[in-house]
Image (cartoon, rainbow, N blue to C red; front, side):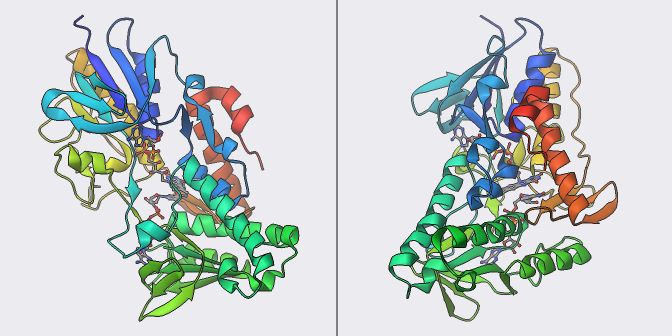
Length: 396
Ligand code: FAD
Ligand code: NAD
């Protein structure tokens, strides 16, 4: 048939919003849409710090894709993309091949380790449902091991590498979880050490200094030791080497030092910066009118020429514009340029505590924490309506 084929790779924030919008805007038989994702569920990356620390169940951070999309309108293929071949408009999956007329790439980013020796081999990352289940189980196991070998203080030393938003949100949850684990395993909380190590001269570099100070105060009170202006130089099976060669012995290193674009993108031959493609104003890869890139793999600059940080917020907005432009292309109508509407940033510091900037104002403490819950509920509503809000929503 000559119905155009649209293939969407990845059902993260960018991919799922693109799919949902296409489902709404396309008329019957206007296009064949296929959504490909590694798992048969969509997960809320923005919630993963909680199941990673064990303060929430991983089930609350995912939802089956069949519950979100209308499978009469969109074909869902559960598979892993192994290669993107723009030259022959094909995508190679682990178990087959798809051809496309239009491609949307939304496979999300990957941890950036900056070549730090041992980081890939010895540290864990907060990236997916599987990765956070591993972290949670690993942490509990260290408590169990310590009971048998109480001289091994490294079992109870936890290192978070990087004090960006991911590191800060995770260590806030972990600090909340420690007293519970100590009680469960009959361990004196004084034996547990939590380190957050940051290379830059401040935690949350670039964020509002007053809110950063507040965050560090809250977290320090919960037992977090910050090492700021201290770079991790190496990660070994025994811990990390920091600054001028100091060793912190730990069996648990969580690396939250940054993310880069997916390797699939550079392997496909696109020109990238840290794995991300500088897309045009319509979200297309340069030189490819039929390939759109959304989310963590796209690189866009604000009017002052600074790159937008890779966030769920921008990925969602890109998904909406991307779907609009796909429909416009098919109908031979003019495309719309992407304009980022910054709704603000709110980051959790554990139960009942958060910091944020929204509606041009600063927030901290309990109200900021409520704002964070509201943002999460709004997202559930956008992708799954009231039923999803009721099923997966955390209200307090
Ligand atoms: P993702 O959401 O990463 O989705 C990618 C999808 O592609 C996944 O479903 C994955 O399974 C699939 N996939 C990957 N590889 C393949 C493959 N080879 N084949 C098939 N499928 C594949 N941003 C905010 O704006 N606000 C927040 O509060 C916030 N909190 C965060 C908290 C944490 C702990 C973390 C880690 C990140 C947070 N972020 C937040 C950042 C945000 O999560 C990301 O920017 C966002 O997820 C990027 O969306 P995406 O669509 O590019 O990809
Ligand atoms: P990031 O790049 O924002 O932060 C990584 C941090 O690690 C930086 O502060 C960096 O200086 C530090 N670092 C790098 N190398 C280091 C080293 N060798 N030793 C010590 N520290 C080192 O990454 P992230 O925190 O994972 O965030 C990724 C994206 O997701 C960002 O755009 C962020 O805004 C977004 N995010 C948002 C929220 C939220 O809005 N609540 C939460 C999490 C993530």
